[in-house]
Each structure stands twice: as structure tokens, then as C-alpha cells.
Image 1 (cartoon, rainbow, N blue to C red):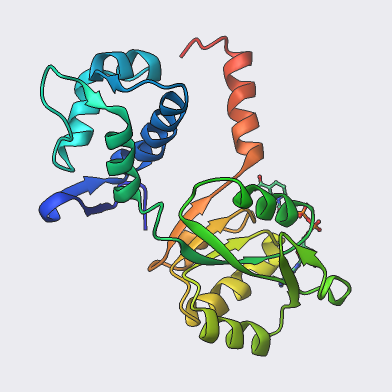
Image 2: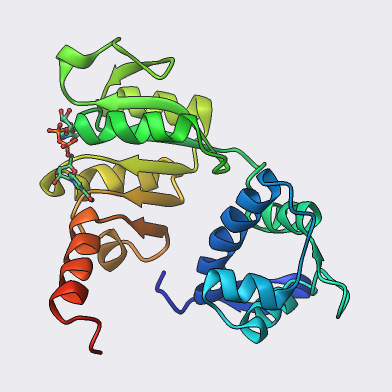
Length: 223
Ligand code: NAI
């Protein structure tokens, strides 16, 4: 599914992926200011602190019914709760991590302390030496077709976190899709979206992010 795919908002209204991508940013911002004790915030203040425009924020929120009374500002806790509900942070989608190397370990640890709506229920690796080692309270299982199939049948995960090499990913993704996985948090450099159309993919690439930073530094933000 591509960047401009649309999803259903309130009353089945269409919401673009661009709006959906801003929801976690609103959620994180509200989380931070709630922790600082702020109770009310206007769309203008939110806009200036988040480097957006107030009208963009209001338009985004209108997709989901608005959330506030014009002129009174938003109740921070309530808005955070509403946006959290829309994202589904409390849904606790079950997830499985494939690849328990350097990156996989860091990703598993990260999941342990963020409010992401994703609950890690299993960790698999093809390396037998890692079998039964504890990672964040979960014993690493050997990745075989039989083991992963039995796990998916039992635990019904819908999300897979892929921290495996590019060459291994096509086969692993195809296996996981056949076992009910609907979404991939993809750290491998394999292009899952290009080859499997009916799943949601979030590609994460630290190098791309670093190269974007390098471009901006090298071009002095000229563009
Ligand atoms: P690593 O070598 O420490 O770990 C990879 C793990 O995947 C190993 O434990 C290996 O046994 C396992 N594995 C390989 N094939 C498998 C399969 N078919 N099924 C299950 N497990 C399998 O490597 P590291 O540093 O953890 O990186 C993992 C991958 O992520 C690399 O291919 C690397 O290119 C990529 N990477 C991506 C980054 C990003 O920003 N997207 C950043 C760093 C690495």
C-alpha cells in the first residue's frame, strides 16, 4: 500500500496517509506537554511549537470530528486520549520479531519502553546458537517453517518486525503473510511493498535519514 493510500476516518471519511503520518507526531507532542503539566493548548500554539500551520492542524483533526470548541483551545489530556484511540495505542497489536542480532535486540528493547500499541510476543532467529536466550523476557526461538507456523497459529500476531538481511526477507515475508501477518516494520533493505501489495509496510532506514541530513548540511538548506 502506497504513501497516498487512503484510510477511513470518522463516519468512513477518507483520510490520506499524510494525515495519518502526522497523528503520531501530535500524540508524542501532547504526551510531552501533558507530562509538563499543560492542560490547554490552542491550535495556534500547537502549530508554532510543531512548525505546522493552525489551519493544517484543524483540517487534520476535522477528519476525525474536530475534538475542540473553536476559541477555547484543546484539553491536552483529552486530545491525547482521542488521538491515541484513533491510532489504536491501547489495541496492543501482537507482534513477532524476526532476527535477533544487533539491531533486533535494540528494537526489542525499544519496544519495551514506548507506548506504541504493539506488544512483542515472540522472537525468532535462524541461528541455533541464539535459541532459548532471553530477550526482553521472551526466549528466542529457532526460525523454521514449522516453528513459526505453530507460533502464528497459537499467538495470532498481525505485525512482524524484520531485522534480517535483505537476501532473506522475500522468503520470510512471504511465509509470514501466508501465516496472517498484515503489517511489517521493515528494517531490512528489501522492498516489501513492491513485491507484496496487500500488506502495510513501514520501512525504517537510518542511512536514508542520515543521507537526508548530509544533503541538507551540504546544501545549507538552499532548496
Ligand atoms: P546481525 O547480523 O547482527 O543480525 C541479523 C540476524 O538475523 C542474525 O542473528 C541472523 O542469524 C538473523 N537471520 C538471518 N537470516 C534469517 C532468517 N532467514 N530468519 C531469521 N533470522 C535470520 O545484523 P544487524 O546489525 O542486526 O542488522 C540486521 C539487518 O538490518 C542487516 O541486514 C542490516 O543491513 C540491516 N540494518 C538496517 C538498518 C536500518 O536503518 N534499516 C540499520 C542497521 C542494519
